[in-house]
Length: 302
Ligand SMILES: C[S@@+](CC[C@H](N)C(=O)[O-])C[C@H]1O[C@@H](n2cnc3c(N)ncnc32)[C@H](O)[C@@H]1O
Image (cartoon, rainbow, N blue to C red; front, top):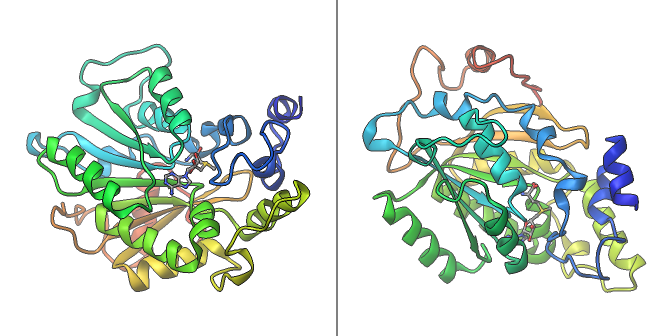
């Protein structure tokens, strides 16, 4: 089958992967809710760009601030969520760690209940990851479910939000305003944000896929004014409109998606970054900071 053949060669073309029609019923993934997404975009491709000590360095722990709280929006069937959890806690396959859920807890949400059910069933760290069905664009449900999770920890914001390969689906289904609001909500909810935007060629591929299936275009595709260099567009929205600052780009995956880290300029629960590690706004020092953290690659594009 095409999917497994592509996986075996490891040379997945991003644009065709996300439009992969053979593993789906026609039109069955209008939100990017592909049932085997990690076959096309394996978690390892992203993890190799992220230093395992990232969270420990961003959030030097004191007992009152434990655990680090993460929000994974659009978690699909949880493969990347689990991989991130293991990566940041340096856990290996089959290894369990009794302290893990005291160090890091991830709330992972997806609009598709079938994917969430599978994620829950297959999660090897049920104490450390919570999966919920949530349409993140539904303001009422979002507020109730996220507040209820945060209040269990006596917190009002997440330490970090993961927003991996979801921006295009929000954009196509909710338009420019929807993307802008999505990023606004995330930036008000998270002290740090790691975003992996889909490039514009993926939008064209997603629209082409619908046409091939004889379905209507996405409602908003033709009218989107936010287009072109999507990574740059998202940097602009987050930094100019939503009070975040761009920290760094960790590099690009082999399917040409960049991993961008942002930090809220102000949140209610901000822990200052140690002066020795970073001096705000100074590119030279920012680069040094990330190099200290493990030879990170800043593309210098933004
Ligand atoms: C392309 S997949 C990415 C999965 C995973 N984040 C990764 O990068 O491997 C996008 C996911 O976002 C979910 N999604 C799309 N719109 C959503 C929404 N409004 N609320 C929550 N999840 C959504 C889809 O169901 C899908 O599982």
